[in-house]
Structures are given as structure tokens and as C-alpha cells.
Image (cartoon, rainbow, N blue to C red; front, side, top):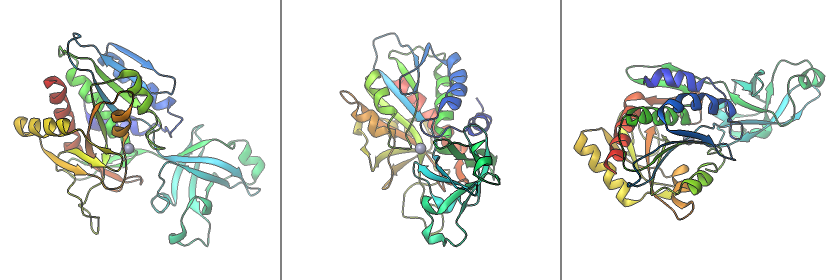
Amino acid sequence: MNLYTTLQRLCAVPSVSGREEKIRAVLRERIEPLADEVRTDNLGNLIAVKKGSGVGKTVMLCAHMDEIGFLVTFLEDSGMIRIAPVGGIHFTATAFGSVISEKGVRGVLVPNAKTKAADYKADNFYIDIGAKNRKEAERKVAVGDFFVAEGGVRRLAGKRITGRPLDDRIGCAVLLAIAEELKAERLAGDVYYVFSVQEEVGCRGALPAAFGIQPDYSLCFDVTATGDTPDASVMACELGGGAAVKIKDSSVICHEEVVTRLCNLAEEKKIRYQREILTAGGTDTSSMQLAGGGSRAGALSIPCRYIHSGVETCDLGDAEACVALAAAFVKEL
Ligand SMILES: [Zn+2]
């Protein structure tokens, strides 16, 4: 599987938290030939399983398929559309950008004319769809409609790519590549590939998914921050440094056995890796750790610069390292 081509396809589909139907359909088509069974649960999580011989441990691999966006709250007489954020919107990074609604209506997200950058927040922003007045706007947009910043991915130097929403379509692409790598393997335990909903609003989808699966081990695939840009907070994680083995983020302390296994395997198989401690931000890892009777949870993160902006930047080499390391982890179990 070509990760870049897969990402081009996945990033072109808008799927804000709570409205993941479109991306789920694309992912379902991709995962079906790589799994024994595929289903969608009540919350909307896409759950695929590759059956083992029934004697091994159950593993859950998870990446979230939702993305941050906006929700229409009010239509002004002028035709301008007021919004509320869905997930951790970074308004400075999203200002003056193109947005698209779930119905395909295009607009631009802009701040009120006199708003200073320091005061950027949802209340001071609106979407201009080009409507002359409320009546015209109402023909295209209703209160409760979801918008996202327009997606897409482009190549930079070497293996670097930029665009959105690499958070977390790159995790979804990694999951598909792992499934492809494990397809012909005869495994002892069941492997679940879960594309979760509503991570960006509080790691919600992965919780009931893990509760239903009751995995022994779980691994999350999501982006993480880096410390390698001018003036960035100190962090021992960089683009191109390999798969980031999570030790801790604000929502989880990863299981020691999982961390040790991943690091040892990376050394043994000569897969590039780095240790990750994310001081601000959580992932589905915590939901999988705590669901039901709990699981031995860890994460392989893909380092990403400028998270939640329109120019999220990753290195495909790091994603490839995550695929290789996760496949080795599952085979060893
Ligand atoms: Zn994410």
C-alpha cells in the first residue's frame, strides 16, 4: 500500500466528530478485503477483525477517523454564519481559510473586522458563504450543520508531507497498512482494527469499542507534537526520528510491558523509534486502557508539526516505522 496515495484519498473526505459517515464508507471499502468481519457499532465506530486460531491474546489497534470542525449556531440577517467549535480549534491557524459543510457548501472562515489576533475565538468568527442575506444563506445552510476546514495533502522535501487532517488520517492509513501486512499471517489471537469516532471531543468512540472487544492489549495510532521547530516547547520528539513510542500523555501512562516490548522490538528489528512524552493532549489510548476490565495499553505516535492547523506536517518514514513496529508487536504476541 502506498501511504501517500491512501492519504490523498482519506484527506479529501470531510468527517467532523459526530458526522463520520463519509470517511467510514471509504475506510470500510479499504479494510473489508483485509479482515474476516467488519461491522459498525451503535456509536459509529468501524470495527474490523482478523481472526486468530483462538489461543492467543486479543489485540485492539485503533485510530480515530473524525476531525475537528465547526457547528452552525446562528444565521445573521446579513447572511453571515456564526459558529461554535467542535474539538480543539486553533483559531489563529484557521483564520482566513476555506471551509466546506457536510452538504458540500463552500465558505471562508474569517474574524470580525476589528478583532485583534490575540482575541481570536469562536465568538469573534463567522463563515461567509457568499450569501447576500439570511434568506439566501438559509437555502444552503441550517443551524446544526457541520463545517470543516478544507482537506488535502501535498508533498514537501524528501518524505515530508503537509496538509490536513493528517490528525488522524495518517493513523488510519497506518492501520490499513498494518492490516495489509498481517493479512497473510496466521496469528494465534484475534486482531481488531478500530476506526473510532469522536476522539477530538474527548476520546469518546474508543471507549465503547474497547468495552465490546475486551482486548488484552491495545495500541493507539495518532499524531503527537514535536520539539523540533523554532521556539517549540522542549520535547524529545522530532520529525523523521521514527515511530514515537508513547510513555505518557495527559490522559494515560502506558503499560510498562507494552513500552518495553515496543522498544526492544524496534532495537531488534532495527526500526527507527523515539520515546514520546506529550505533556499537553490526550488520545484514545486512555479510553482503551480503562474500558471494561481494562487493557495493557500503549501507543505508536506519528510526529506532526503544527497540529490542528491546515498545514499539519509529517514524515512518511515515521508512519512506515509505525507500520513495521506494530506488525512486529502483533506477530510476537
Ligand atoms: Zn488525533
